[in-house]
Image 1 (tube, helix red, strand yellow):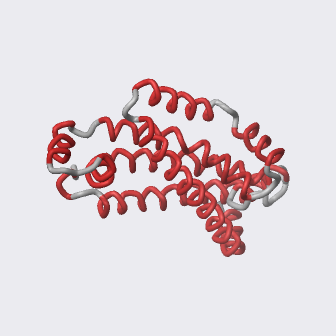
Image 2 (image 1 turned 90 degrees about the vertical axis):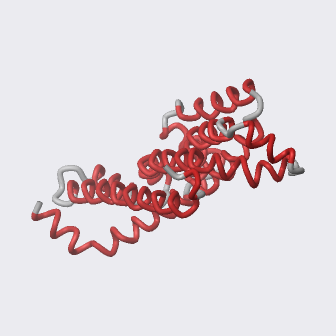
Length: 216
């Protein structure tokens, strides 16, 4: 523990820089996944067959080992953050698509009928009624997706992306040396810290963006 403390005290700025890189990598992927996933959910939620198909397709992505998917991205896109973001976005889709469909399907039909009787168009009902009522469920899906890819993002260092995975892989490459364990432990703790920060962020976002009338 003393060696770890001395290591962190000496290399704290580098750890912080890697943590910021890791955070930005995850946030970029989750923003893209949220946009794509919600759009897919909106397009398919009225059809049971299409909803099942969308869920099955996004679930299939999660069966692909992360190293294999990152390897495919390198072949198609090349080394670096771009490949990592594409792969992480794909991994994050399932919880978002599934929760978007579940949330939209859970909106009380009577509420929609009332809005329709007031003259609201289908688009207006979606934007002003369906999505706000489904938002807490959708946000839960985004939160789960984020926690999922925070850890996977560490593996992205294998293909030249930034983030805390660089220290973990560096430590594994130096196994047996004095700095091996401090590198691995520091990188791992950094990933956990990023996950806690993002989870706290979602708690705040949920309280701020969820309509007061439907809060728990």
